[in-house]
Length: 138
Ligand code: TYD
Figure 1: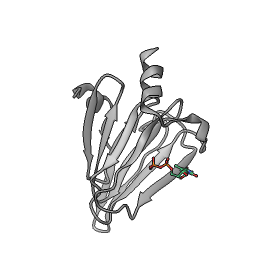
Figure 2: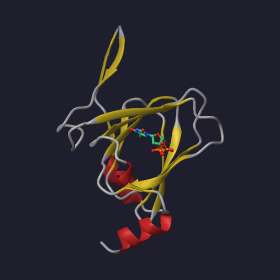
Figure 3: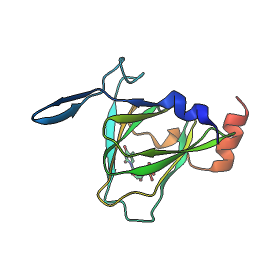
């Protein structure tokens, strides 16, 4: 597994703590390198269930475990790396053309994703061999 994937894409989100609790925030362009067009979240993921298994042609995403924990496997076509997200003040940036798989969701976990574009099925690469052909041609 290749360590530079993690080093480039995982960062701490600002956290404001006072007697009322914690507040974290993300904004463009300070923390996220794209204008946020869409948010979606995964929750009620059963144990032993994996999701993802795709890449995107152009979409960029920021992923946060706002509750609980899960593992994200990132694959750039040459290297694979597993990143555990388990803090609401940590963010994983996923650039375009990264294959991703999410697994090992703890009960009650919520995976928040901020995305650079509206939903567009034609942006998905759902076939791993096609993904390898696309990144291999770069
Ligand atoms: P999908 O991206 O395949 O989920 P995951 O990668 O987490 O396993 O999306 C599951 C379904 O939800 C699929 O039918 C597309 C739909 N969907 C939307 O309609 N809008 C969205 O913003 C997203 C992310 C998914």
